[in-house]
Amino acid sequence: MLLRFTVENLFCFADETVFSMVASKDEEHSEHKCNLRDSYEHEALCAAALYGANAHGKTKLVEAVSFARNLILEGRRPGQSIPVSTFRLDAEKLRQPSYCEFVIFHLGVEYTYGFLVNNTRIEEEWLFARPDGEEVRYFERVTDNKGNTHIEFGGILNNLESEDNKFIEYVARGTRDNQLFLTEAVDRNIEALRPIYSWFLNTLIIVPTNREMESLVIRAYEDSDFSDFVSSFLKLANTGIDTISIEEKSLNFDKLSISKKSKYTSSSDEFIKEFEKDIADGLVSQIESEGRKLSEAVQPSMNGEMLLRLKTVRNDNHGKSVLFDIDEESSGTQRIMQILPVLADMRETSKVYVVDELDRMLHPLLSRLFLETFLKFNKNNKNQLIFTTHETSLLNLDLLRRDEIWFVEKDQSGSSHLYSLASLKVRPDLKIERGYLQGRFGAIPFVGDIRTLGW
Image (cartoon, rainbow, N blue to C red):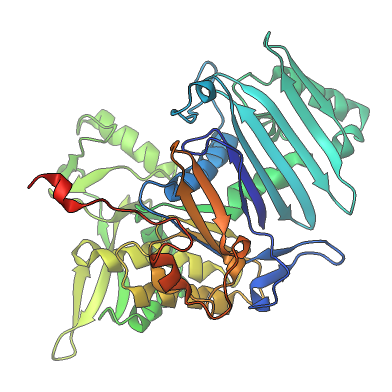
């Protein structure tokens, strides 16, 4: 589970900014708190809602988490720059590195992992752990102004067999300036560091506003339980959809046209060969079929490649099933289908979902239904749902705790700041939604006089 994320000098966060999922001592909605380990000092929250005016930093916080995750999982090629975007409204900050740090609880251990990075190199990187009560250093990496890198090891990395210690030191010396040691070590099969890497790979899930449908198509094709769950929720949400189904067709290369954004440039035999290789590797290509952009996925089969198309099923006035392409459904219906895997997986896994604009194109009652469903079924699990939103109807202490409500606001210098409702003095009987819209907590747009438009 995520306990804290700290960011500094990245995007619109000029100063050190801390987002915390550590529960306060408040006893309201105690079922929203997770006991992580006997005698462990903290409890973790299972949900957090982030509010703020447009362009004040909600999405940038999601992007900061995503930037760190991508750097860890994807790494950098030799000579490749690091896509750091420092705070640009302060000339001093432009010359300083960006800072990211995660404090997580994973497999019974608290880990603190972070790095200091600029566009060309990793300046610092560290990993500490608390397997019990005492913090232990796993490694610290520092690069000086001359480009010399030094790594010190401790804990389990210092207590291995002699040959393993030599190998770790060899990997450390061979790690490029633009590569994280954590990434390089796991790529070289140093198993002691795999748990922290696996948290970023398998536990931390980023759900952007424009999540692709291909993975949803393949999952609905392979997992009947998931398909049934999606159908049931769409019924519950009163969308008019009776069920979903997957239409299978043989892939006809003669009817494919190439998207302008595609890497494929022709329909020659060479194109087909490359396309089939990508299919075999599990890559979904950007294609059009019969002149239409469709929510499709390509699946290898014994009889050649199959084109899978997601369909919704409705009943006409005679009770007969009528199929619709998902592209024909409303934007709100498509959005709810994009985020439904969060609910479908939560009873069997422990994930940290970071969802940008949970309420995007959704009716307020649908946003509330989604959140209520998550909170209800997460009572005996350790999932976390962190989401940005403008839906003020969720600002309700009957639904969320004070420490689960966060605000993002920019100051006059353009720097974003985070603070929770728990940090403010609020009367117990105050209507939070009304107070927020009245500006009592900040993080709202203060619009100007429309007469200044000069119309």
